[in-house]
Image (cartoon, rainbow, N blue to C red; front, side):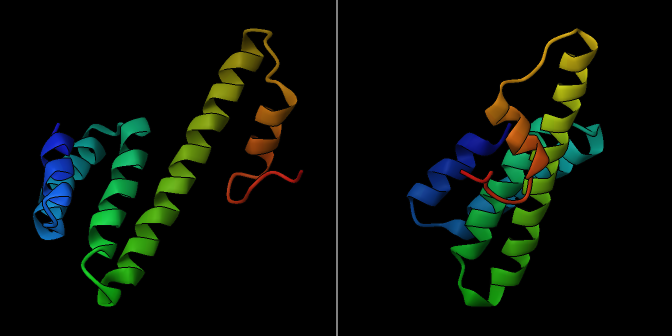
Length: 106
């Protein structure tokens, strides 16, 4: 896990170094097909990239979209596991699954 080094780099004002560490972690997680940590690592990577300036915003947005989709897929898989076990998620959890790319209606 390289995220601690990336956090320190971001706190030190060095998003380029943070990006380097986060890309290593992202690549490893992607190779392992690990989805839960991949999504949060993608979000942190997007933050490090965006901190480098407007010329990198498009790349950061793409990573945020991927992160959001991976989180939604993880929630959907969990709901299937719960349903198979006879458990029904609370209404708020069902709404977040129904609207994965936006806030649930209030």
